[in-house]
Length: 476
Image (cartoon, rainbow, N blue to C red):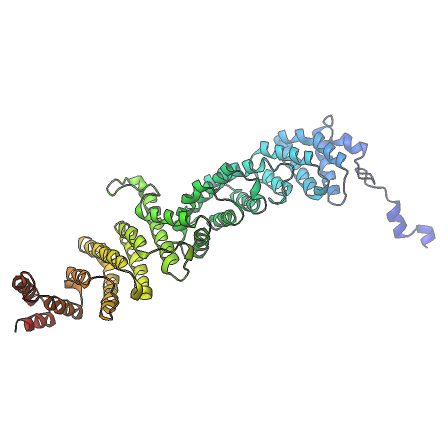
């Protein structure tokens, strides 16, 4: 039977070869004629689509690839033929990548530059650069293009290519940061920081990934350090991004820019690093910036406290708590939530290191507590949010004094307690009365008027019985 009809294998061999490509990998004359500029547009497109199928299974000669480009690149200028032509060129770039010479790669890159950031041009660049990994042939120019596209897509509200451009920038930095110029790195970092600070933006995590790669593989431009620090401070306040943002902040603090990062955090607390306006110079359209500023302050407090006395201390930038407490005292006057955050971190400091705190640190702590007391008296929102935390800290401080571990003059502590005696527990005020009376002796200047003043204050009928009883026993 096989002699009569022939075997299936014989039929396979007997089939004519594809009329578009020869066995050697060159394109047939009929195919060249089909894609030439003298042919009708429909014929050119049909031939290109046939070539696209062949490209998936055959390796073409370098001269054939160059010829295809020369014959079809004019179709990129026609809106009706641009898309199918681009798809063929993308397929050719991907399947024939090892056959592409440096000149052709550079030519493709130049064509991509001219088209701008579109879905297919971005896909073509990704294929041409192997997603940012291989940039031979256009290594001197790709940083300019990626920086431009990063700004273009991130500054737009909802650019459809924003995510893919971010991923391309991330891979380019990871694999080829040496070819990214300082100005273009600055542009990428700046655009990423601006976008990352937008509330509820779906690209925030990807922006942080780009910053992560800049810190790991690139060279962060010194002029952008403040922008990066401010961005991390804003994001560390968000529970979804806290771990990722703190990890980057810690990486900065442990890097060669660690001391500069610490100074940047302190400048945020002092209001000198982020363009804060003095209190009273607010305008209605500043509201979003005010919210961002408050988040930034809270983030700076978190980072400084965590790095100096938290669970993730950074030894390279640790310093005396006194140098941090003073700027915190400035920050608490901005908002009651910031004040609450500061008190939370101060409580951690006293619980963990209260026995070892130096004299100057206690001086700064007392000054901060005095400011909090004044704010609670002047503004009800502070009293509602912060007063309970303050009194818990004062109880801890009193206990340290009782144990002999309060590293400052006792007068500072009891002046503080007397300042808010009306809101202190009776046991605390009784200790205050006892301390004052012990320090009033006949050798003390004006001791009688001072004793009389003490008795009058705490024997008044408005005082609670335990306090009145204690002060009355002083007279007897």
